[in-house]
Image (cartoon, rainbow, N blue to C red; front, side, top):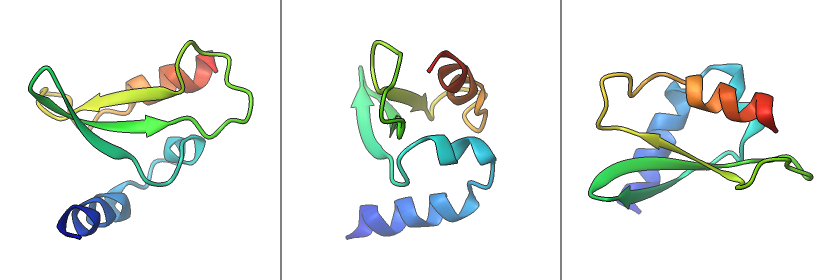
Length: 75
């Protein structure tokens, strides 16, 4: 319940159009001890190896959407 509210608060702040390319609610995972939002591609026929994009939150560019843009171009 608490995590759901946290994610809903974040989603309200995300206003870049690139988020429309992915499923509306990302999951939160820890990869090698680093917290990440995991976005799932919303395309019905994705051309990438994986349908998931990890957005790591422990980096200096944690608010950057460049990896999401790169994924969308490849898909």
